[in-house]
Amino acid sequence: MLAIREGEPYFGIVHLRPGHVPPIHTLAGLRRLLNEDLSMNTPFILICQTFPGFRVRVRQVQ
Image (cartoon, rainbow, N blue to C red):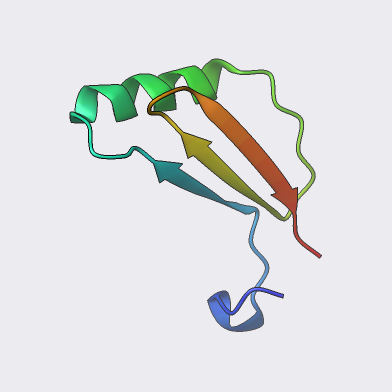
């Protein structure tokens, strides 16, 4: 269990990993992420790396 929210339920966590690049890359990656057809069960942790390439990892949390 994650040590957040003091035991309260949550839907998920989205972690953006932009790297050391201009913010435009992060915004483009976020737009692409929102347009992806991702199916996730809650709760989840989603990690989105936007540079040097676009990469998404999803982990189900129990």
